[in-house]
Length: 274
Image 1 (cartoon, rainbow, N blue to C red):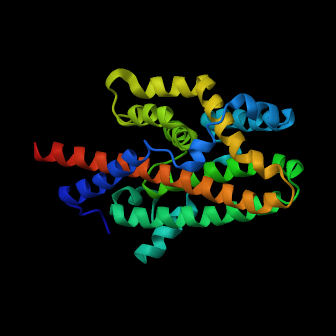
Image 2: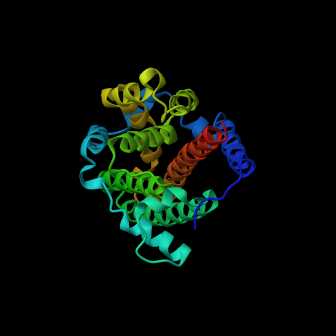
Image 3: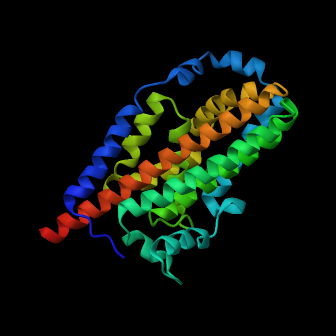
């Protein structure tokens, strides 16, 4: 089974993504609430929590370079497609030729599965409040990166490539950024696969610098975790925050990777017809 989508079908998929991008320009109540002055957040958050978040962000730098302990095996994603296509011994390369609708289906299953894991984890680590929060931070980072890698694979992109690990981190940054940050990232990634202006090199350099990434991730991630410090109440809040965080990150990864695949197919169709 290979992709047989018409240009009109691809444009409909693209229209859906453009609507989603437009929706990202607004803030819902939680995000508005989280825009409280970060000086207050800094005072309320103990230093060792800041250090734990800093360590997690340092690990992201290592992930970009080598994949480290977060790099996942492609077999689980291939098995999902084998089950859908009712075929065995498929190669990873066949995924990139599948219909967008099938890729979406696999991606949605991944997001749902990972969100449930994150919800359970958040409830578990929320029991101890402040003290178990230091366990939750690296765990939710791991789930986030694994979710994005699996989504990348479901659209036929290989996280073994450094270029894709950079894209994955930009997806993570997008999900954790404010409106200004989201707009800037969308602009960056709109031409990610095209060499004009050496955008890819600029993006890699920017991510490796880490200044703006660390600031946005620390502030947004830290605030969302702050109320999880309350013992017992942290169970409910922890499960809600973790689940919604993975759903947001998963949705961003799905839409951004889906857009890349659609644009590639549209460009390919134009080059074939010219």
